[in-house]
Length: 562
Image 1 (cartoon, one colour):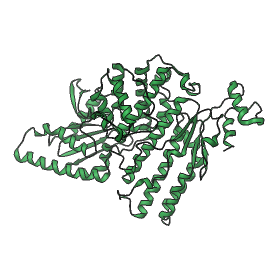
Image 2: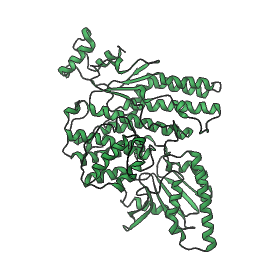
Image 3: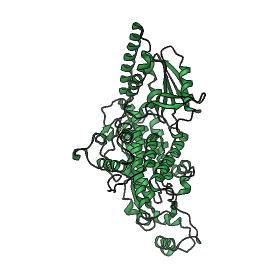
Image 4: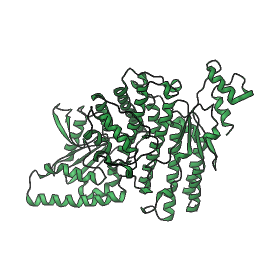
């Protein structure tokens, strides 16, 4: 089944809505003038914002969307922000004829007044005097400042499309958002498990659930589920801010745990099997997969947990990089890591240095060659696109999956370019009736990981779904539609085990194309290996083990048997 990424409207839909919005408000302005109505604009400001945001699929019921208390930096006096969409946009409306510079300065005055949390800082300022709009992107490198009459609003769709979630996120913004997200998760972890939890991370982390304290294990599972819900709220998995409204309108510190558990059950139940589900949960889709399948006993939370979750709901989770955030997420159990800036991960730059020469550079070059040549037929493009589904990709020391995530993301970019090129050659680029399910072939089911520690392995499964959804958002922006992944039927294959104690040929079944092996296994020398690690080396190398080989060579021995 193909979908326009669930609740996210397609470009043509937005354009049609903007045309209607423009016509309605131009007529209303004329009516004010003809009747000599004074102050009408002040009463209509909220309605104006509601109508504009509705064009982009944003519901007026979003919490904190309108009129937020704030303090002005210049005077210290209190005031109210006309429009506040956390981490996205701040808006101010003035009456017709007022210079929009006044509205812009007022919005900045509120932002500089200390009333907005760091993780809520918007990227855009939107001002209106009903007759004209001004949009400013607050970015020193890629920012812009544009002003236009209401009659031309449709012509500025590309600049306004961020309201529907179609926004280009720079690497710097992605990294910053991931840092904010990790801090919010650390706050949730502390509120649930307490600040005294201080567990080893990385290679020293607990290998199995049984090695971990029960409250830490339960908190870990809770955070995985909450991450999925927070991400889904901002990325088009369902109606924007559905989970945020659920938390704000239907939970208190006393009932938060029972309400969340009830929601988890709903998310794990097909729509046609649900009975007497309250309205607050009925709109959530059936998710399936392993995320909500495991029964969990009801937790009871204090006001600190409720506040921490509400703060997390106000952050824009769609901007995180699953590759970075997955690595940061696994550190929440360490007291030191929770209090640090969390730069403990293999950078994407270094990951690309590994997978680029191995397979990515060659595939990208061939795709670019085929797309760039006018003599390449759509049939040839389809054949190359289809060949991407013939490969398997294995990281046998995958941690939280960052190598797999980056590899999948980059391969999806290649596939999306090919899909666009095929549609252009066939003259079907704007055809919304075509089912993209038959065009999008690459799957997270081609990606395999082995991880010794249970918590990073669990994160990797979730993170791979998140990057798949982000890739689908990019596809939807390019062609207007993307595959619908809910309920979850396909997942990455993450094996929780010792990579030197399992048969990789069982982990990765035979495929039509090549199997690429990559990652960052542990480097441990002769005098620092444990007895168990020495036994691992003897097992994989057999009679060839001389006692001096570095532990990392065990992965080479296993790879040679594939």
